[in-house]
Length: 168
Image (cartoon, rainbow, N blue to C red; front, side, top):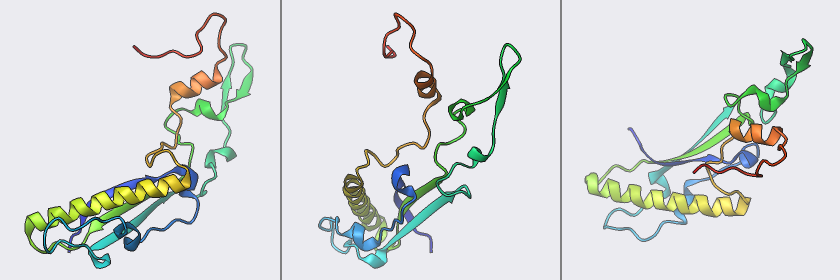
């Protein structure tokens, strides 16, 4: 039987390396009253999938064992610092995602949609509560620092240059 994906969220990088688990019961604690008869949710109606993308080094950066070099204008060879590698290389190497599926497809399209809406709302409430206890700002925190931010952090400010530049 094919289950319906209701919601998913990325686990913030700060907590991705820790032991993390969520059960259907954890999510169902946040379910409100059933919107229509016969659409109440039970733990048997919900599947929680924990996805993990591990780049073989867990939280450690595999590129720390590789050095990159460049030639300066004078011909001197210098080692390139980590931020200069570019945006295509992430800063974290262990990513996790939680997906919630609805297993109960009984009762017609309206009943399934009502269950999906109820489960989705409960999942988002659970996620917000969980993130608040973890001290995380949001569930979709990117693992990398955008290249423009890297350059701004690396390049010293010139005399007369404003501290921050905003796009108009």
